[in-house]
Length: 95
Image 1 (tube, rainbow, N blue to C red):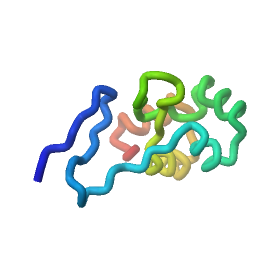
Image 2 (spheres, rainbow, N blue to C red; image 1 turned 180 degrees about the vertical axis):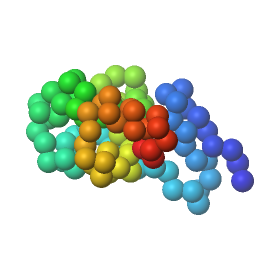
Image 3 (cartoon, rainbow, N blue to C red; image 1 turned 90 degrees about the vertical axis):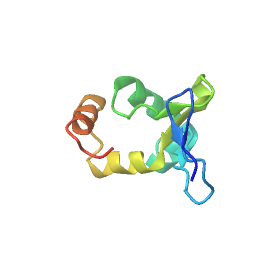
Image 4 (spheres, one colour; image 1 turned 180 degrees about the horizontal axis):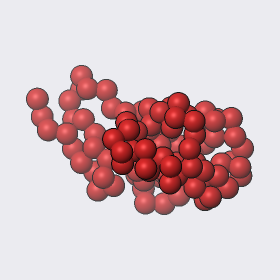
């Protein structure tokens, strides 16, 4: 089995074909998942009420990606603001 590859963005992707890669969502897909308009989602993101992207694959705004499993966990935790979410993760809560 080969070692996972760590991208310059900090994301780690499995290199083996049998290991499923985490599903990454674009900003538009996050909006659809949360049933939010783009403007509302941008406002929530800038105010810290929507979690920050997990990685940025291009370095620009269009490269922001959220892991679907982390977004689902954030919702399961009651969609806390960014500070409460960071504290939850720091306490050992699974993100």
